[in-house]
Length: 291
Image (cartoon, rainbow, N blue to C red):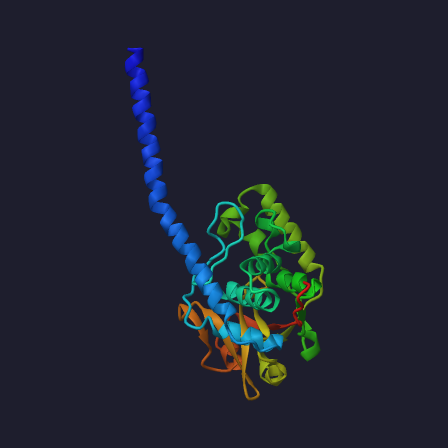
């Protein structure tokens, strides 16, 4: 009897190992293919012509994503927080982040490690991944942290912005929309960060004033659209493309399901979206090799 049980255990073990081997045989090629696809796209971005001025680099890199499929919630794909690098599908935020990270890598050493390093610094507080709350979920927080480290400058006030006085609490008040907020300690950290954001001063350009400031915008400026939704800072992000004195928007469009250049100028685009109340504008600083 014991001999039979031993034999059965060996067979079961071998069957299990065979199953695991088969699973790895199926999954490994897909993983390698995904990695090689990302690397191929990265290499293509590194071969784009040099333009020198950071705004023009930002514009050209953003243009290189035109037609790329829109993927909603592209950072919410892992059970635990980790860096997501995806160039073949974007949402509005990851379009902006990837464009910045790619031009930084292009300016520095054309390495994939430099791209990943910059992406992590852009996306996470102090460039450190320490769970879900370490990600810069709110655009106001994203701009503040990236201005603090010298990557960009929030120019909203200098082009006529007025105080943006709004209580930011959308995530903590709608925890049911964010599965990662289920643990109480995670919710508390997000709530604490909202309080920090609310203690800062913010400015924006109201919707009715956007036509006036379009002439002051430059190619490659980053634009975030402030929200009429209670507790939410911004709905959307994109990159400016100038045509004469008018500003158009390159953005990952939920409606068009891909990255597009807006058909109408910025003022008209903003006016057409009821939940947009205005804009916040940031401009990239010069990129140096020792960053």
